[in-house]
Length: 405
Ligand code: PMP
Image 1 (cartoon, helix red, strand yellow):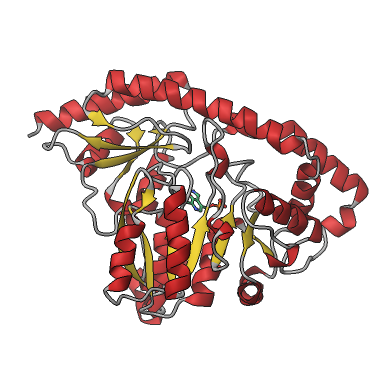
Image 2: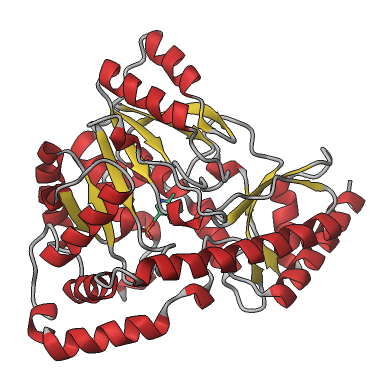
């Protein structure tokens, strides 16, 4: 019998315990539905493709192929190509504490960095504190590692470190505190400077590791960017994704960690994929070695996103007056609430999908708090005409759900 015809249950007794942990079929289904033909998607955190520096990348590729083709097509060290580590160390030093390239590991996206951290630090039952709601990809990784999640409320200034301090004082001991410090996914919050310092103090008092996952730091509409928590703490692992600042397709990101952890993280990565794509690292190192490129590119990126966000927010306020939200200060998302208690986000989602528009209902992002009336809407990937149509379909879906009440 062809193996794809075997009933799924035939394998159930073979699956490892961790396979059953951290599954998120709901999200997989939502994102799959969002990519169905004819569906306008406000669901994924997809960067706007017009921000990709296609010409500059093509030129960098040509230079790599004419000057260093054989090295760029060869295996490379697990830690990463030297030029790429140097560039990432320099970028980290510009936005936080001074970093030596030896403390940089090049990973296949920050998502792999999260997985490596979980493998190196977490045993089943260990506690990870994180803001509620939180980035789904991190929640999945920590759950799959068997971690217990300690949900800490957050507000527009990020994780409530005062509440974290209370929990720690009450005797809970956690190994990791996970934060997304700029333009949080999904809430858009920016972790306040005082809270960064407070978090650093708590880390040294209680001995946990701060995982600072920062893919949206370059996406502040007014260019606002606060220093990494590592200026006040040597217990920080920084995840520096390039997916939103450049493009996600290279699957190449930087991870900065204290030296003893870098050794362990590198060993974990070696088991996973030996190394990050050599060619992508050569191309990115070539592109970023031009000191003028990134600041110019980021200025353009911020202009595009800030204009897109403003027109999307204006349109949404006009067309969906039942949706409450604050205009984002950066990042890709509107974290919004349905003001009518009769309409639940999951019902709205299902009806909206049948009318050809997708977003992500709030519940999957929430660990403990109630997300049943929240929606995460990504404004980044549709153009103006498509956005108008998507919002019109959401308006119709809202009316349909109301009528059914
Ligand atoms: N962390 C957060 C908070 C994210 O939103 C994302 C992507 N949506 C990632 C990590 C994954 O980034 P990468 O593409 O570098 O793997």
